[in-house]
Image (tube, rainbow, N blue to C red):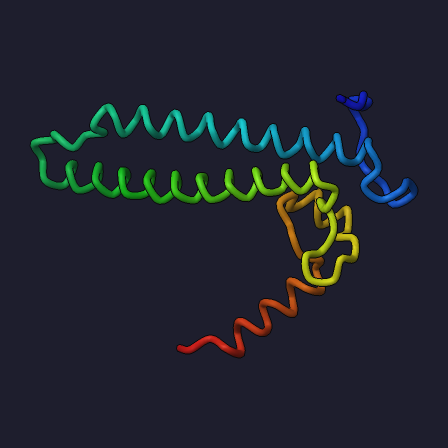
Amino acid sequence: MTVPLPPDYRPTKKEPFMNSRQQEYFRRKLLGWRGELLKETEDTLENLADGGGLQEPDLADRASAEMERSLELRTRDRARKLISKIDSALLRLEDGTYGYCEETDEPISLKRLEARPIATLSLEAQERHERMERTHRSD
């Protein structure tokens, strides 16, 4: 069931957290982001299929084309990982856990979700997690 949203709708603290309008807002946001990433992936695949200058007779041109190809592959891999996180967020929307911190079960701030709709941790939990990573990192 799709919930109608005004074109200028933005979630606010004044309404109940993760009500049907907020859920629909974030669902649309996630689906839009996912669609953009898939389109970019298609464009990347087309560029890679074209050969992207790998047949250049000039060694410098060929090296440049190879660098661009490598960058496109890294970008595509990042997009693939992001799409996976978006899919997970969409599943959390379906099961009712979206917007709640995986560590504390507390609501993740709307401001954070707006900036990073795939967030699974509250800002405080994320900062704790990053501090722990820094202190336990073996350099």
